[in-house]
Length: 293
Ligand code: 0GY
Image 1 (cartoon, rainbow, N blue to C red):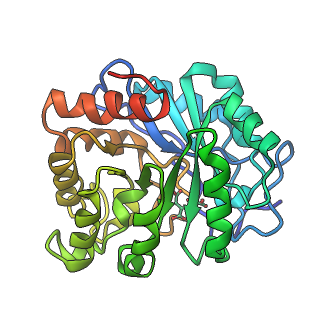
Image 2: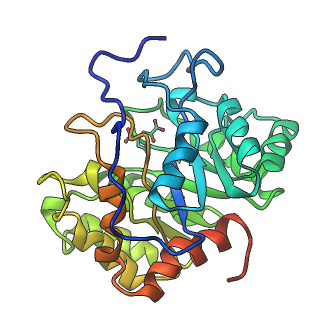
Protein backbone atom coordinates (compact mmCIF):
# COMPACT_ATOMS: atom_id res chain seq x y z
CA UNK A 1 0.00 0.00 0.00
CA UNK A 2 2.15 2.78 -1.32
CA UNK A 3 1.56 6.34 -0.18
CA UNK A 4 0.06 8.61 -2.89
CA UNK A 5 2.83 10.37 -4.85
CA UNK A 6 1.54 13.83 -3.88
CA UNK A 7 0.89 12.90 -0.23
CA UNK A 8 2.75 15.08 2.31
CA UNK A 9 3.93 13.13 5.38
CA UNK A 10 3.52 14.73 8.81
CA UNK A 11 6.21 17.05 10.20
CA UNK A 12 9.20 14.91 11.28
CA UNK A 13 10.33 16.99 14.29
CA UNK A 14 7.77 19.48 15.59
CA UNK A 15 9.09 22.14 17.96
CA UNK A 16 8.57 21.91 21.71
CA UNK A 17 5.73 24.42 22.17
CA UNK A 18 6.38 27.63 24.11
CA UNK A 19 2.82 27.43 25.42
CA UNK A 20 2.62 24.84 28.19
CA UNK A 21 -0.85 23.23 28.18
CA UNK A 22 -2.51 22.78 31.59
CA UNK A 23 -2.01 19.33 33.12
CA UNK A 24 -4.74 17.04 31.78
CA UNK A 25 -5.09 18.76 28.39
CA UNK A 26 -6.88 16.82 25.63
CA UNK A 27 -5.99 16.79 21.93
CA UNK A 28 -9.57 16.27 20.79
CA UNK A 29 -8.97 15.63 17.09
CA UNK A 30 -6.25 13.34 15.76
CA UNK A 31 -6.02 10.11 13.79
CA UNK A 32 -4.08 6.90 13.49
CA UNK A 33 -3.15 5.55 10.05
CA UNK A 34 -2.23 1.89 9.96
CA UNK A 35 0.49 0.79 10.01
CA UNK A 36 -0.82 -0.76 6.78
CA UNK A 37 0.93 -4.10 7.30
CA UNK A 38 -1.17 -4.58 10.43
CA UNK A 39 -4.24 -2.49 9.57
CA UNK A 40 -4.59 -2.20 5.78
CA UNK A 41 -6.25 0.89 4.32
CA UNK A 42 -9.77 0.41 3.00
CA UNK A 43 -10.21 -0.59 -0.67
CA UNK A 44 -12.72 2.26 -1.22
CA UNK A 45 -10.46 4.97 0.23
CA UNK A 46 -9.90 8.24 -1.63
CA UNK A 47 -6.25 8.60 -0.57
CA UNK A 48 -3.38 6.47 0.68
CA UNK A 49 -1.49 8.23 3.47
CA UNK A 50 1.83 7.57 5.12
CA UNK A 51 1.59 5.25 8.12
CA UNK A 52 1.10 7.13 11.39
CA UNK A 53 0.54 4.59 14.13
CA UNK A 54 -0.47 4.81 17.76
CA UNK A 55 3.06 4.84 19.17
CA UNK A 56 3.90 7.92 17.10
CA UNK A 57 0.68 9.57 18.21
CA UNK A 58 1.37 8.90 21.89
CA UNK A 59 4.95 10.18 21.53
CA UNK A 60 3.63 13.40 19.98
CA UNK A 61 1.05 13.77 22.78
CA UNK A 62 3.85 13.62 25.35
CA UNK A 63 6.16 15.90 23.37
CA UNK A 64 3.47 18.58 23.08
CA UNK A 65 2.64 18.37 26.80
CA UNK A 66 -0.84 16.88 26.36
CA UNK A 67 -2.35 14.13 28.51
CA UNK A 68 -5.12 12.61 26.41
CA UNK A 69 -6.38 12.12 22.86
CA UNK A 70 -9.68 11.84 21.07
CA UNK A 71 -8.89 9.72 18.03
CA UNK A 72 -11.14 10.14 14.99
CA UNK A 73 -11.53 7.34 12.45
CA UNK A 74 -10.18 8.66 9.15
CA UNK A 75 -11.79 7.95 5.80
CA UNK A 76 -8.75 6.01 4.51
CA UNK A 77 -9.73 3.20 6.92
CA UNK A 78 -13.41 3.38 5.90
CA UNK A 79 -15.73 1.52 8.27
CA UNK A 80 -12.91 -0.79 9.41
CA UNK A 81 -12.32 0.60 12.90
CA UNK A 82 -9.67 -1.93 14.00
CA UNK A 83 -6.71 0.47 14.02
CA UNK A 84 -8.78 2.92 16.07
CA UNK A 85 -9.87 0.28 18.57
CA UNK A 86 -6.29 -1.02 18.84
CA UNK A 87 -5.04 2.50 19.68
CA UNK A 88 -7.85 3.08 22.18
CA UNK A 89 -7.20 -0.23 23.89
CA UNK A 90 -3.51 0.56 24.21
CA UNK A 91 -4.25 4.03 25.61
CA UNK A 92 -6.89 2.92 28.11
CA UNK A 93 -8.24 5.92 30.02
CA UNK A 94 -5.96 8.27 28.08
CA UNK A 95 -8.00 8.15 24.87
CA UNK A 96 -11.52 8.12 23.53
CA UNK A 97 -12.65 7.54 19.96
CA UNK A 98 -14.95 8.62 17.15
CA UNK A 99 -15.82 5.80 14.72
CA UNK A 100 -17.04 5.69 11.15
CA UNK A 101 -19.78 3.12 10.65
CA UNK A 102 -22.24 2.06 8.00
CA UNK A 103 -25.97 1.63 8.53
CA UNK A 104 -25.60 -2.15 8.68
CA UNK A 105 -23.15 -2.04 11.63
CA UNK A 106 -24.20 -4.64 14.20
CA UNK A 107 -24.99 -3.96 17.85
CA UNK A 108 -22.14 -6.35 18.70
CA UNK A 109 -19.65 -4.22 16.73
CA UNK A 110 -20.92 -1.06 18.39
CA UNK A 111 -20.55 -2.61 21.83
CA UNK A 112 -17.00 -3.74 20.98
CA UNK A 113 -16.15 -0.16 20.05
CA UNK A 114 -17.94 1.28 23.07
CA UNK A 115 -15.95 -0.97 25.40
CA UNK A 116 -12.72 0.31 23.81
CA UNK A 117 -13.75 3.96 24.39
CA UNK A 118 -15.63 5.03 21.26
CA UNK A 119 -18.18 7.70 22.17
CA UNK A 120 -19.32 9.07 18.79
CA UNK A 121 -19.68 8.45 15.07
CA UNK A 122 -18.56 10.80 12.35
CA UNK A 123 -20.77 11.84 9.44
CA UNK A 124 -18.42 13.06 6.73
CA UNK A 125 -20.01 15.23 4.01
CA UNK A 126 -16.82 16.06 2.08
CA UNK A 127 -17.23 14.73 -1.44
CA UNK A 128 -13.47 14.49 -1.96
CA UNK A 129 -13.23 12.09 1.04
CA UNK A 130 -16.30 9.86 0.89
CA UNK A 131 -19.14 8.79 -1.39
CA UNK A 132 -22.45 10.25 -0.32
CA UNK A 133 -24.61 8.39 2.18
CA UNK A 134 -28.41 8.26 1.85
CA UNK A 135 -30.29 10.08 4.64
CA UNK A 136 -32.11 6.90 5.64
CA UNK A 137 -28.76 5.23 6.26
CA UNK A 138 -27.73 8.07 8.58
CA UNK A 139 -31.02 7.74 10.43
CA UNK A 140 -30.45 4.00 10.87
CA UNK A 141 -27.07 4.78 12.45
CA UNK A 142 -28.63 7.44 14.70
CA UNK A 143 -31.14 4.87 15.94
CA UNK A 144 -28.42 2.33 16.70
CA UNK A 145 -26.03 4.66 18.53
CA UNK A 146 -28.79 6.22 20.64
CA UNK A 147 -28.81 3.07 22.76
CA UNK A 148 -25.17 3.70 23.70
CA UNK A 149 -25.54 7.43 24.39
CA UNK A 150 -23.01 8.32 21.65
CA UNK A 151 -23.00 11.65 19.84
CA UNK A 152 -22.31 12.66 16.22
CA UNK A 153 -19.32 14.51 14.76
CA UNK A 154 -19.92 16.23 11.43
CA UNK A 155 -17.43 17.32 8.79
CA UNK A 156 -18.67 19.72 6.11
CA UNK A 157 -17.63 22.91 4.34
CA UNK A 158 -19.38 26.16 5.32
CA UNK A 159 -20.50 26.96 1.77
CA UNK A 160 -22.40 23.65 1.62
CA UNK A 161 -23.99 23.85 5.08
CA UNK A 162 -27.28 25.17 3.68
CA UNK A 163 -27.79 21.74 2.02
CA UNK A 164 -27.64 19.84 5.32
CA UNK A 165 -28.51 22.39 8.00
CA UNK A 166 -32.10 21.14 8.44
CA UNK A 167 -30.87 17.56 8.75
CA UNK A 168 -28.22 18.52 11.33
CA UNK A 169 -30.69 20.54 13.37
CA UNK A 170 -33.00 17.53 13.60
CA UNK A 171 -30.36 15.08 14.83
CA UNK A 172 -31.35 13.98 18.34
CA UNK A 173 -27.84 13.88 19.84
CA UNK A 174 -25.09 16.36 20.63
CA UNK A 175 -23.45 17.33 17.30
CA UNK A 176 -19.78 18.35 17.10
CA UNK A 177 -18.69 20.41 14.08
CA UNK A 178 -15.20 19.69 12.77
CA UNK A 179 -12.60 22.33 11.94
CA UNK A 180 -14.67 25.47 12.56
CA UNK A 181 -17.13 24.31 9.91
CA UNK A 182 -14.46 25.06 7.30
CA UNK A 183 -15.30 28.73 6.60
CA UNK A 184 -13.66 30.64 3.76
CA UNK A 185 -11.26 32.72 5.85
CA UNK A 186 -11.04 35.43 3.22
CA UNK A 187 -14.72 36.15 3.83
CA UNK A 188 -14.05 37.12 7.45
CA UNK A 189 -16.24 36.52 10.49
CA UNK A 190 -19.10 38.58 9.03
CA UNK A 191 -19.51 36.35 6.00
CA UNK A 192 -23.03 34.83 5.74
CA UNK A 193 -21.66 31.26 5.61
CA UNK A 194 -19.79 31.75 8.89
CA UNK A 195 -22.78 33.51 10.45
CA UNK A 196 -24.91 30.50 9.51
CA UNK A 197 -22.59 28.28 11.58
CA UNK A 198 -22.74 30.72 14.49
CA UNK A 199 -26.53 30.77 14.36
CA UNK A 200 -26.55 26.99 14.49
CA UNK A 201 -24.20 27.10 17.49
CA UNK A 202 -26.83 29.03 19.42
CA UNK A 203 -28.64 25.70 19.76
CA UNK A 204 -26.85 24.14 22.73
CA UNK A 205 -26.70 20.70 21.19
CA UNK A 206 -23.96 21.94 18.82
CA UNK A 207 -20.26 22.01 19.74
CA UNK A 208 -17.38 23.09 17.50
CA UNK A 209 -13.68 22.28 17.08
CA UNK A 210 -11.51 25.38 16.81
CA UNK A 211 -8.96 23.34 14.89
CA UNK A 212 -7.15 23.12 11.58
CA UNK A 213 -5.84 26.64 10.91
CA UNK A 214 -3.26 24.96 8.67
CA UNK A 215 -6.06 23.69 6.40
CA UNK A 216 -8.12 26.88 6.39
CA UNK A 217 -5.34 29.44 6.01
CA UNK A 218 -4.66 31.32 2.79
CA UNK A 219 -1.73 33.22 4.30
CA UNK A 220 0.21 30.17 5.57
CA UNK A 221 2.01 29.76 8.92
CA UNK A 222 1.56 31.11 11.56
CA UNK A 223 -2.08 31.23 10.42
CA UNK A 224 -2.95 34.73 11.58
CA UNK A 225 -5.79 34.87 9.05
CA UNK A 226 -7.62 32.03 10.86
CA UNK A 227 -7.20 33.51 14.34
CA UNK A 228 -10.38 35.65 14.39
CA UNK A 229 -12.56 32.60 13.73
CA UNK A 230 -11.21 30.45 16.56
CA UNK A 231 -11.20 33.34 18.97
CA UNK A 232 -14.74 34.34 18.08
CA UNK A 233 -16.04 30.81 18.72
CA UNK A 234 -14.12 30.44 22.00
CA UNK A 235 -15.43 33.75 23.27
CA UNK A 236 -19.00 33.17 22.06
CA UNK A 237 -19.38 29.54 23.17
CA UNK A 238 -16.67 28.87 25.78
CA UNK A 239 -18.38 25.74 27.15
CA UNK A 240 -18.84 24.02 23.77
CA UNK A 241 -15.48 24.39 22.03
CA UNK A 242 -12.81 21.71 21.56
CA UNK A 243 -9.25 21.90 20.26
CA UNK A 244 -7.20 19.33 18.34
CA UNK A 245 -4.00 19.01 16.35
CA UNK A 246 -5.49 17.00 13.45
CA UNK A 247 -2.23 15.03 13.41
CA UNK A 248 -1.11 13.44 11.07
CA UNK A 249 -2.78 16.10 8.90
CA UNK A 250 -4.11 14.06 5.96
CA UNK A 251 -4.24 15.60 2.51
CA UNK A 252 -2.29 18.76 3.24
CA UNK A 253 -0.97 20.06 -0.06
CA UNK A 254 0.84 23.29 0.81
CA UNK A 255 2.93 22.20 3.82
CA UNK A 256 3.15 19.78 6.76
CA UNK A 257 2.32 21.90 9.81
CA UNK A 258 4.58 22.02 12.85
CA UNK A 259 2.38 20.66 15.66
CA UNK A 260 4.35 22.70 18.22
CA UNK A 261 3.39 25.87 16.37
CA UNK A 262 -0.26 24.78 16.36
CA UNK A 263 -0.10 24.47 20.16
CA UNK A 264 1.47 27.91 20.40
CA UNK A 265 -1.62 29.37 18.73
CA UNK A 266 -3.89 28.23 21.59
CA UNK A 267 -3.37 31.26 23.89
CA UNK A 268 -4.18 33.53 20.95
CA UNK A 269 -7.61 31.97 20.48
CA UNK A 270 -8.23 31.30 24.20
CA UNK A 271 -6.46 34.23 25.87
CA UNK A 272 -7.20 33.55 29.54
CA UNK A 273 -6.32 30.58 31.74
CA UNK A 274 -10.02 30.04 32.44
CA UNK A 275 -10.82 29.78 28.70
CA UNK A 276 -7.83 27.51 28.11
CA UNK A 277 -9.00 25.18 30.88
CA UNK A 278 -12.48 24.93 29.39
CA UNK A 279 -11.15 24.39 25.86
CA UNK A 280 -8.48 21.84 26.71
CA UNK A 281 -9.82 20.04 29.78
CA UNK A 282 -13.35 20.74 31.04
CA UNK A 283 -15.17 20.54 27.70
CA UNK A 284 -13.53 17.42 26.25
CA UNK A 285 -13.62 15.65 29.62
CA UNK A 286 -17.34 16.32 29.95
CA UNK A 287 -18.14 15.17 26.41
CA UNK A 288 -15.81 12.20 26.04
CA UNK A 289 -15.11 11.00 29.57
CA UNK A 290 -18.47 11.90 31.07
CA UNK A 291 -16.81 13.84 33.84
CA UNK A 292 -18.62 16.81 35.33
CA UNK A 293 -15.76 19.24 35.73
C1 0GY B 1 -9.23 15.63 8.96
C2 0GY B 1 -9.39 16.18 7.61
C3 0GY B 1 -9.34 15.49 6.44
C4 0GY B 1 -9.39 14.08 6.30
C5 0GY B 1 -10.18 13.25 7.01
O1 0GY B 1 -11.28 11.28 7.39
C6 0GY B 1 -10.43 11.83 6.72
O2 0GY B 1 -9.81 11.27 5.83
O3 0GY B 1 -10.83 13.70 8.05
C7 0GY B 1 -9.24 16.26 5.19
O4 0GY B 1 -8.72 15.73 4.21
O5 0GY B 1 -9.70 17.43 5.17
O6 0GY B 1 -10.04 15.86 9.84
O7 0GY B 1 -8.26 14.93 9.15
